[in-house]
Image (cartoon, rainbow, N blue to C red; front, side):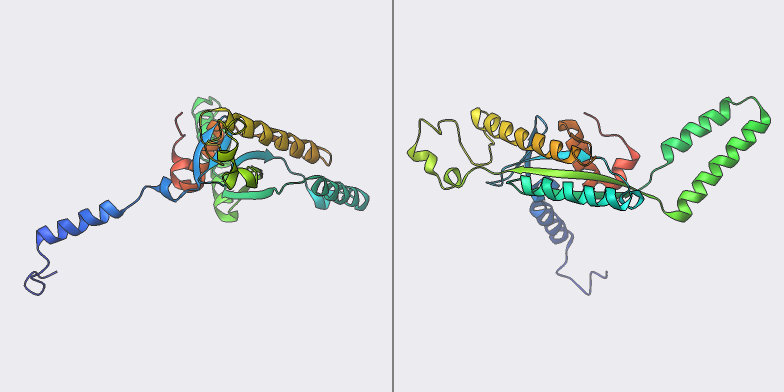
Length: 234
């Protein structure tokens, strides 16, 4: 840029513009709906309540017989009809990262004393690497989101008229350190247990993610490249 053509863009003005942009920039956490994660429970901002995340197994529905498929569909319908709260199914797809597996094979290749086996291991490494690159293999992880939102009375502020009953409830999200979060978490755990039992009836195993696993999940979702290169520290 020629300063003579744009005399009003001095160095001080440019520095001031950059500082103003930096001041207006917000952290990534400001755009997330998550307030905090505690005891394996996600607390959302405002009055959106709490969430638990269950990692679920899967099976190949197409390989089952027609009778087994009908039975699975019926069990799934009964499971949905038994719930009095909404749930969300999330499928997370990501390209398969074979770097740790290839590094293990390279270490095995270095330790191999038999020259013929060493050559075969090297050829196998190249085959796996080229196969994954050409076919673009992805891994799928299945999650079930279990919600809990406090009652309408708590959202409307009826707690102020009933101080003895709502003494420890500071907000509908359960973000205080008193009995409110514990009470809401226990109700959420009951819902999660009901969901796990219902999924188990038609062959789906599930397990709730703990706090560290939830942090790693969100970190991997918003930083996929960094998550592949390094392991998140506690």
